[in-house]
Image (cartoon, rainbow, N blue to C red; front, side):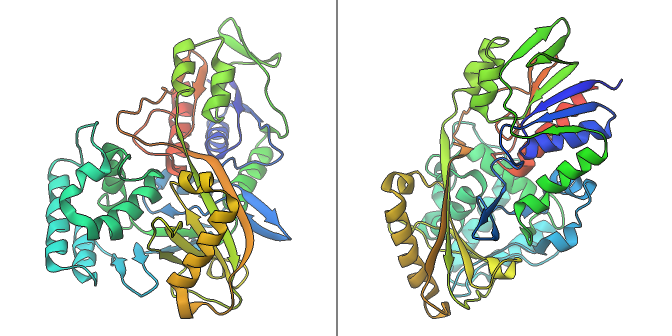
Length: 422
């Protein structure tokens, strides 16, 4: 039966929960402490240009995220640039997966990848086949580095480390192999198009948060921005949010904020939510004149003096020509080094990696640091469950589930929570 529902937090998980619950007939009130929706995947306005707080990508396997984006009226065919998976490097090399059945596409991409020896290719195909035969499962204590140690340094540098930090935002030496394999299974081997890259041609705000808020208001939901919830109180089988009554509450806030609100009602859950370690992501925007990269996204050689793993050509994605976004995942060493050192290293990396492709001296535009961009996805990590206590649920990419901290993980948790209300 329909219920009155408070959703606290208007990031992608909270918006997804609010939309899904409204579709199910619940009377929804959405609370958000910030002045805008979107959470850690939001639009940032800088000097009149719509940028993002970080360069997010989607893949074809993000079925729930894509469904809800369409639900709120966004045409994903125009808002997203869809291409087969291409991990192209500035020199043209890279893993390019052609369209078609996943296993065949992967084998073709590996076989045609220049710069790898025959031994490299055979080792990767044999290892991937072994993962598939074992159902993409491994002991939960294993790291990605330990899982892939037999592949050698070339494949670790060119493929495993970039994929690992892109998917888990945790270095391979520390990242959970079990979660890594689950991502590979769903992304590369779950069906045609699952590994396709979907790069936003619009700002993150236009892709989901703004249309979702408009959709919610059009469908009778209440959205209260700049409204931080101070306390939750149990009221029999119902709840009070700062004194206002609701049948149920969904916490869609970051873990620390959820722990604050849940603390009087579930001590064990609160301890689990408060115990996360975090990894930052740094995005460095550079103006590079009339530069146009050969691909909208390029993989970059990274290391001790080269911070970024990827660069995005925002001019090919609806932004100003020549605006490049350099993305540094697993960025704690660079956060520790400081903004100036990070910028200097990124500028040097841009000149080295892009060389003659640059049509103008790259100039700093904006540097964005998300210090708690994602949780550290390490082996044996215990994540808090969806149900905190009857009538009080939690959603978000940090809630117990098979995925790392991704948009799809956040959205799926919201869909599951609304289903549980029934």
